[in-house]
Image (cartoon, rainbow, N blue to C red):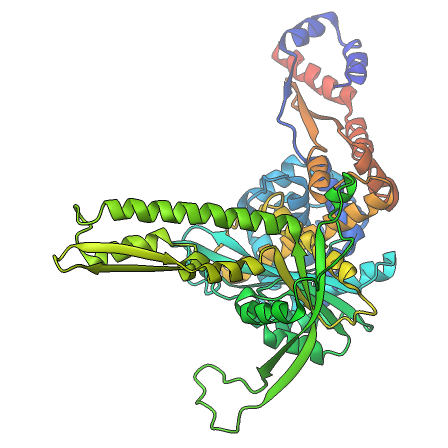
Length: 600
């Protein structure tokens, strides 16, 4: 604490009062608060127009920080709009790294962050009732949430010259604990985990800055494939030209490929499901021959950095499928013969072979063969003892041996029977042809696309697909730093809105990170940026016996300083100095001396 102004006023007191004050004087240091981080987070959110966009689409008046500060100066308590309330929640998500504030504690937290002084926000207006109503307003209108995100993306693209031509789409499960009566979206997941309730987040991000462009929450028992049409419609509205959407195997169903092929502007890349392609893949490999693969130059970023050679090969092929256009809906009667309509397609397929993975697959299979045969021999030695005296019990043990190894189960013919003496016997045969057929697909994976080879060759196709790691990192970021798994709300609309606001927080942070990389901060990641932002704390000190609240500067690091200069954000250090400068030590000491003088 800078005590110079205080000491100057202290020196003017009579000696007797100086002596008494010296005995009572002490400085209490409170816990550091993320006030600086909340200030930067709120200001970034306003700079990117989040609250303004929300209020505009809702038809509410949106006040800037300056307008709210002006109203407070005039003795008027400013109104907290839905957009402003959402901006406060997002600022908390950005500033409180892995320690989000619960709604019923936010008013108290805002008081500690001095939001009245630094943002013009009255803390008493940021109670759980106002914040809950803001979440209801957002969550009760799924169309509104899509419109908000689309408007923010279009505004950012136009303002900062970000191309809208390549997207990544995927889904993730959000585990949810606690009682959730009345919330139809919280369901037991399709993954089969007992007792685990979850939501499904369907997310699409823009390649490059990783900005979320669509975000929907679905019931926990819904898979991503059936709802992809909704995502494709939303993405197609964002751009007038051709665009590319890269998806995972769970989404690349025949019907979804049909949707993208009928959307003339859409190009897609995605892996073919193994259950759809086993026989096709074997037939294609046999007809192509052993020497049909050609080396490609693809290397991962890590391999390129270490100077390692490429270990990939590719084989161009075609894949044909058909889809039913008038599929029967649930509880709809079966269609009569001739009523079903189909569409047939033939698209490009590229079969890749990763020679390193091929070797690993072969080694893994050899270990499993050794393990299975050892367990079969062990089981053979335990027959007709204790609980292994029946064929049923022994067959159950055989199934346990092959659990998780369907490939080997097909390669082994295991016979469990009783002999003429009534004893259980176990024999097995290994089918080498099945194992050789399995070895044909070691290290292989297939990418399907409607890109012509002249426009995107096999090397570029794999490079683009591997870029979808960005969405995996986005999910990791949402679940980690933004604490997506921690949902303390029960009302369905509020759960949806809270998840959605975390996606908006990711939008703000990823856009800020994109600017930092352009400014030379190459090693900065969104996770590191949030950690750095969360460390922008302010320490409050109290000077007793007066109860003077004095703030000590904040840790403004280089990345935060760059953002302050880029977007003309308020400087936390300057605000702290302004708040401290407003303290009138002379008046405070004068009042104290008069009070003490009367008591003496």
